[in-house]
Image (cartoon, each protein chain N blue to C red):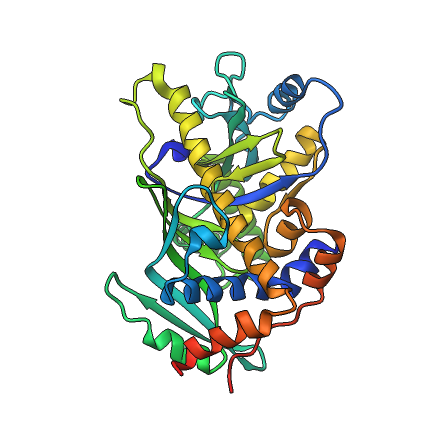
Length: 178
Length: 204
């Protein structure tokens, strides 16, 4: 393995590109379940915040933050046209008919913040604490597994021979609304 | 309890290697050996250690379990004393005036000011109670995966140091590169292709 600090900086762009790809998948109505070959239905929606960053040279950076439940994301695609990258995205992920997760994912660190899982069952009594812990743990592992599977699916496409034709060109068409 | 809160934040780790024998015992020993002291050390600015999830302020691993199903769940507690700058400023002003009055001079030297500040910091540090911060740790030993329920850089650094000291296993932060290296099923050829990728440019 490479030196961790070097690798963190060198490959953080993969995380940012992954978020851009997720946004593209959602906006163009791609079938997430099929994309990750999941047995159970998986759907994604963009939540209430999106952060993009654009390097302006000389270590200067432009940061574009779009927030709000009904916020339009047009400014985001405009920023993409100018070369900005998605660095942070709030997502709503539905697994099966009932499980809904809300969270913000950072592209460079894969840190997850503001994660709301479905409520763990139980009345909160001490007797039930072990059950609640196990259930919560399962929910956390389930959502991180979905995130990882999505990321690996993106990388598989990104390194495929037909990436330009099947991945890059459609994303660019979406960005420029051609 | 952070872990059972409605909303949480977390950073993720891959744990390199495993114990040769009896993981539960090894984890128990590591937690007990590096548990946060029950009594606060009034001379330490920062102290950090493990504590049971269900009892963050009474670090007794004999009374409280860290095993829940197939998971290990415990907490990292970091106790930190912090002295507000305004409090230092107030005591400095008082002591400087006192020193001037005692010496009969209308000024004091830079060195004297430094000495006064050092004394004040010592006194306040001893008087000031530590503020505890508790971060839960969920560890799936079999899957070599661990969640630390915070994304604060300082807490991550404390965790990484203390974890290695306690269990002699290296926690590797999971981010794009380390995810590919440790958690993916990519072949070495596929990994090589990923690692030679360069950033996309959508601008025309």
